[in-house]
Image (cartoon, rainbow, N blue to C red; front, side):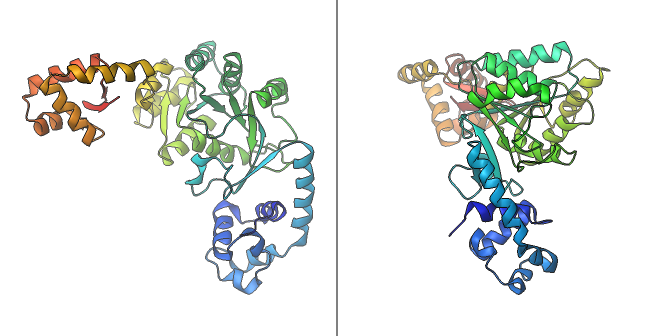
Amino acid sequence: MENSLFNIIALTLIPGVGDINAKKLIAYCGGVDLIFKEKEANLQKIPGIGPALAKSVANTRLLKRAEEEVEFILKHNITPLFYLQDNYPRRLKGIEDAPVLMYYKGQANLNAERIIGIVGTRKNTEYGKEITEQIVHHYQGSGALILSGMAYGIDVAAHKAALNNQLPTVGVLAHGLDRIYPSTHRAVAEKMVNNGGLLCEFMSGTNPDRENFPKRNRIVAGLSDALIVVEAAITGGALITAEIANSYNKDVFAVPGRVGDEFSEGCNRLIFSNKANLITSGADVDYFMGWEEKIEKKNKQTSLFIDLTPDEQKLVEMLKSDSELTIDALAIKAGIPMSKTASALMTLELNGVIRGLPGKRYKLI
């Protein structure tokens, strides 16, 4: 299956195609290059395409513009990320409306073990900035990648905090890689290229137009393992990103704020509507994500298995078979009275063998 960069870029330029139909065209035709060789009559038969889009495929001006973009990519050491190639971020591959093609300039691994998205208002308070810095500092030395949208406020605070803590940080842009918006963040962006990167789905020459920001937000949501909203009004980009993350079944977290404060309303609403877990620190995120495990805990667990009581051993065996169980289910399956089950679980948790989860559920560490 041939997929030349010229034709991949040209495909993204076809007016009205979009990412979902672009993937459909590739699937039906058997490759990007074959789309431009297919007869117009056959293209019209593809669901969702129709006569207008089929006719647009034959537009030779698209290939000319694509050629110019390839020159820009080569000149500025930009990496194109096509969704069928190995270098495309794996977290986005299962998302239907993820970009067919993205442009990346940087050093960070977009498939890092942990990617933490941090978003919020452009008009942050000093409290919001401090909380952002504390959360990012918590991950110093962990290798976690900090992701945000390069906007004023919480976004750039997260990027700066990551740089200060020697953490890779990637900014997702709502425009092409030939510019930085806002321009006051250019110095930060230059540092990020060397310790992180800049990512977008837009060709050079693309302005930061209003409609591009929700597109940017879906990439932030899709790439994040954990999306944290620090401060946000009841409407705005941070709330849109949280909604998208929820639709992708991502874990969303929000820092609560004082009742009545404009830029606490969004976070408080997310928590109230069960669209985000309440957190006040990076440790809270670790707890919900199951990121608390440490090598020393694992070593401790190994030695503890020698000294388990019969009841504790039964409970551990139950959790080996089922990744998570409630205290009721454990008591019934193991045939141990509830009081003894609760006592044994407490001992196992204190010794770092198991972890308690919300809803009185437990799992092995």
